[in-house]
Length: 259
Ligand SMILES: [Zn+2]
Image 1 (cartoon, helix red, strand yellow):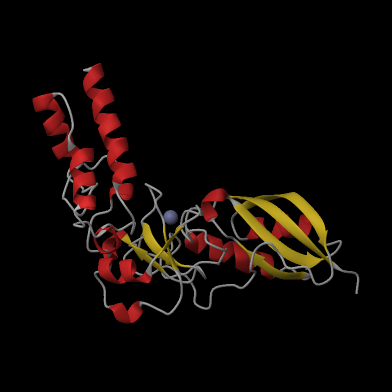
Image 2: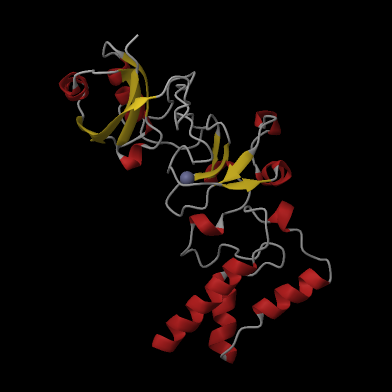
């Protein structure tokens, strides 16, 4: 055998996870392509493993026929037995939500997308490990959906995914979580930033406007010392809120200084 190549393509025109599925199908229909994956449609990239020497134009033509634009960014030979950077397994089930289907993106069902280690299947950003107890405490859907796998937290503001499984096959969105999530609504004044002691950006701002200072960090620290906090089961990020609270206090301070 003549070996295999790993090829990275820039793909134009993907607007949802359904597009990613179409692109993968189009690429995998090209003779000589072993497998293709779109880890993050927003990044506009596809990665594939193909027989060495595959004609670039056949890939571009396949993409064009599927309604997308494309160009090869990188290609390099794969060594015998070397593992690809990406796992190239495709999802077992087709995407439920797709701009190409009549229903728009409802984002109320778990999404299933190609897997890449620890990257959010929706936004492609690296997730933060989270205890499964936090996931169980925060979900508003039946816990029969929780599988014996590791979950990660996505903190990207414009991404609807709150938790996803490490294998990328399962994602829980804001609609499936009991609390509104500070990271998902950075401008939401009434969304808790401290879930244990119930502080919001609005409450922090109100104190600042009345007294010219903020006691919230001292108050949270006092609560922590008194053993009253329970970030692991109250805060969707599963960890202490102090970093977020400090950022909000700084924002309030800066915006009132400007006013
Ligand atoms: Zn995300």
